[in-house]
Image (tube, rainbow, N blue to C red; front, side, top):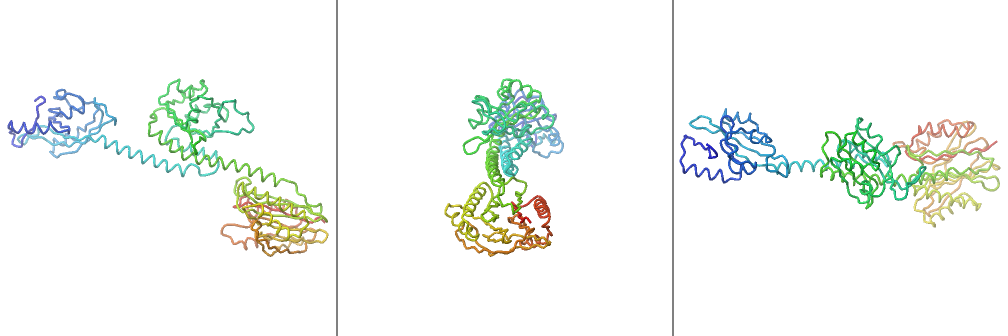
Amino acid sequence: MGSEPFIASVDGTQTSCECGFLQGIVEGTSAPVIILDRHLRYLYVNPAWSLVTGIPAATFVGRKLGEVLPDVQVPDDVLIEVLADGQPREVTLTGTTRIPSPVGSRLWRAVFHRLQVQGRAVGVCGIAVEASNLRQYLDDLENAHQRLALLDAVTTRVGTTLDVEATCAELADFLAPSLADVAAVGIIEEEFFGVPAPAPGMLRLRKMKLTAPPELQRHLREFGGPEPYVDLPRGSVTRRCIESGRPWLGNLASFEIFQKVTVVPERVRIFRAAGVHSVLIVPLPMAGRCVGVILLMRAGASPPFNDDDVLTVQGVAERAGVAIDSAHRYSHEHAMTLELQRALLSEPDSAHPTVEVATRYLPSGRSALVGGDWYDSIALPDQRTLLVMGDVMGHGFQAAVAMSQYRSVLRTVAAAGLPVDAMLTEADRRASRIGLDRAATCLLVLVDPEAGTCTATTAGHLPPLVIRPNGSSGLMHLPAGPPIGTELGDYEMTTFAFEPGSVLLLYTDGLVEQRGVDIDDSLRALTEMGLSADESLENLLDTLLTQLTSGICDDDIALLAARLRS
């Protein structure tokens, strides 16, 4: 039959007119048409099928499906069923042909019908439509959805804390194995404490986290050297990536490419031993600058990185860069606050020898000192001692700075010899004048050993607790005044007896404020703890913190205990 059309009529007859008409339709359509005999050998293919496969029609005739196009998968079992029962069926043909396609593997959807001559099955006829572009569109759409899901996930899984190391670890663990077999994160280091500075012209990159399966960890442990950082020379791949802000891709990398990545050529063997074949380096951007880099590797049977992978990692890096920069800035501010507050709170107490003083500071949660709480003891003329407890609103570096200013103001005011209520009024006025934008509660207690009294005034602060030698204790309730720094100063002072051996406890609200507990109930519990005025002040404060906080608190706690020596 050659390449002539094989078209059977229902009654088995066909005229030349009919054949010519049908041949014009079949050979003129852009849809591939094939006719197979009962043994699934080609009887006919139209020009459209020859065009998409790149094979002449004569080459098909007499040969089976897989003999001419071995890379195109056709479900023979479905065609056999069509021959058997005469029911048309839709099948999918997939694979590659001699004609290259931008979508790679091609896809056709075809419907096969049984051909009959005088009621006898003589073959099948298939009409196909190529759906490669549609499949590619659907694949692209699915990939886009996956990328969006990854980018959405990174915002919830990376940057859950304000700790730089934890954030970098979250990023590396997120990227491997979801986008690579190995993920490493490094951040640019500009301050060098306890280690030599890099040589001139070098850029230091601190190695933060490397995530890889155990079999690769063994090989990559030496990657980058034993130091916790790597110094990048000008012209190195990673350095260029950082400076340009553009990713670098090395797929199926050669020995020479690995040399560029490692900085130290001898370490190329580490890549080889681990089976790494592709490397992707992506900068971590933040507001026009780079805070670090991501290094991704694929090894073994994993495919090389493609353009979608690069775009996805760039999207992850943009989100992660913000989180890392925020954590880095927070850590820097945190360290400054810590040093400032340590310096202020470590100053020796200057109470008179007749007054014994002990202090404690417990930061909130498990963090370092970051609050605005403070205490002080100031020796005044006539053997008197001024005890101070204050709490600046808010936390962080700004609160610590405000705390230091309030402390300085009160020390200056105390030297003027004013009554304690006038001290608060003057401190409030001066704080407003210098422009402190954070108010503070404050409690002043003037201890007078000769008179055996204490005179106290409060600017919105909690009342002091007095623990007596007979075992009783109670709060010294004081007329409330507004916080200092509000320029609303109107304070009253109260004088009460303070006998030798009694203990006076000043504290900030972190000691008694608990979620879900009324403040009055917490203050009542404080008075009912049965604290002893006879034990050492250090032990008393330890007991107090242990029973009320278990070492962890929601807010900073400052404590000052004072006792008249006998």
